[in-house]
Amino acid sequence: MINDNVCKFVPSAKNAPADINAVNFVLESTDIAQTLAVKSVYALHLVTQGSGVLTLDEKRYGIEKGNLFFTLPSSRYSICGEEGLEYAYVSFLGGGAPALVKRVMQGGAAAIFDAPDGLVSFWKTALGNANPQNVDLLSKSVLEYSTALLINYLPEENSADAAARIERYVQSNFTAADLRLKSLARQFGYNEKYLSKLFFRYTGMHFGSYLANLRINAACALMQEGKTAIKEIAFACGFSDPLYFSKVFKSKMGVTPSQFTLNLK
Image (cartoon, rainbow, N blue to C red; front, side):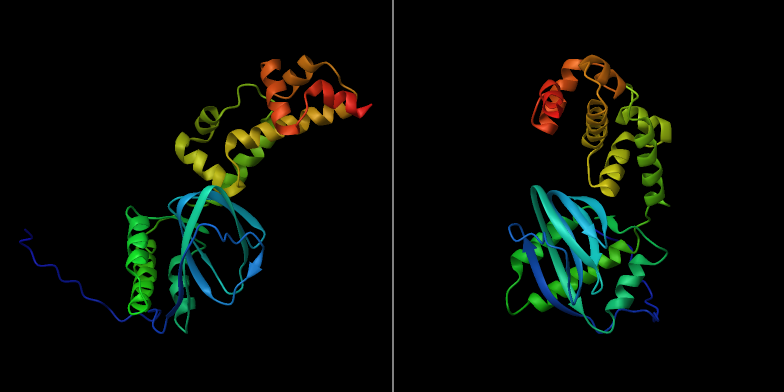
């Protein structure tokens, strides 16, 4: 039982999002927008399941369950699904639409947001209860409630710059056999789980796959230069176990290192 009354004064805001009309309230699980396109509406998207890659204005972002992002009428974007991607979106228009988005994106906030706890189930409940008589109210309520929560979101300062700095470090040090996500987190002073999400978000790849690609590409380059000793190539590219190197090489290239060198002749 609540014993204290709660009363909060609502000031008149110059950028209040008046005049907003929801256009569509959609849950996508099969018709994923894989082709780059420019829509004529604003939209707020929420990843409700799985993971994938968002290409937004020529920048790739890893997206996963619980991520929110806006697309604008000028945005050129595509979404590539991986691991059972499912996402919902509310598209909207109106004179207040630019002001609504600006309230969240002001100060150069991150393109991808982490949804507050419970928002995925809130969206799904709203979608499940939507019908022709109430979908206009539900979709607008979902849009404005979600945006109101995001205004309290405090993005990691310069997270894109930090991710770029970490990516450059990995590109320069991938041949170090002891380079791991754990050591990388220690190097940059981040929590390992947070660093994993940050790296995926700004490269579109999980750290392990990204590192393996760098090492295998380097191995291919050495072979093309005439190097044939598999053990030496493995060590030179950051693999401490030649057998593991051969396994990873075949999974990436479709042939063993020995077969690859033979094909070069």
